[in-house]
Length: 294
Image 1 (cartoon, one colour):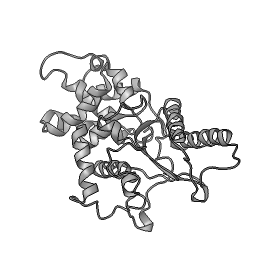
Image 2 (image 1 turned 60 degrees about the vertical axis):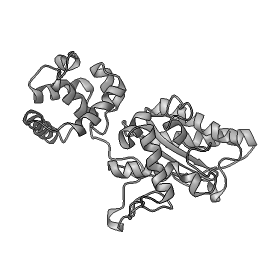
Image 3 (image 1 turned 90 degrees about the vertical axis):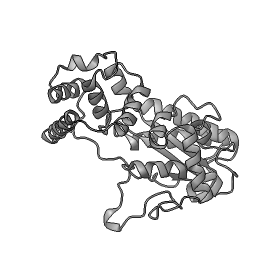
Image 4 (image 1 turned 180 degrees about the horizontal axis):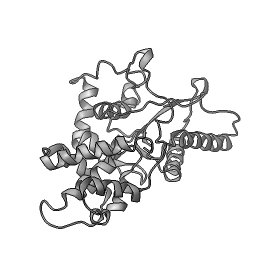
């Protein structure tokens, strides 16, 4: 989240909103971040981002600086456009992520700039519910993991708009952040990055040891129902690591990003077997044993 300097506008006409989204798309490509949801308001914006490489500060500094430069050139302005440093919170809970998506998409409605979340306005809601073509850099899979189908997402957002379901009691509707005690203030800026990011080849070797197979076997898919449980387990649990993106997993396993996303849904639906329970315990021990590297 970031506000305009002196609470002034950062967008003055439709073209400014489009320029910001263009700049955001460039930052996504340059820094390898994932943009899951956005809401652009006249004097501030909200973004829901994932930074597999732990480079949030660099990406945001670039986004704000480049947009400021472009606006200053366009309008012959001078000086900062934004107020101080951007504000951020780490989102580690699936339930809260779902609420935050609804909060972001309802920003214009709550501000009186739109009557309904599906009305044309500068949020990602219409793209996520398939009312308009999404920009190429918008990550649709991350939102669908949290909210379900486009229809389910829209229905969920409407429950928050109409009040048929209440917002969580600990959610601050002025900011979208959870209220916390002073001793438990959520982290600002970059989330804690691993001390050493291991390459995928090394991660595959560790996983192969856990599963009692060869790393090459994990890369090769088998056809048929019930085939490749080790491969599915490996792809799922590597994708769950905080600095491993779906793209990295899809490239390593020869899957599409949609297939990687589906693994998480399938894992929630299918009960654990004695075999997967054992693998999970071994993997957790492996991570603890490598804690100095992760």
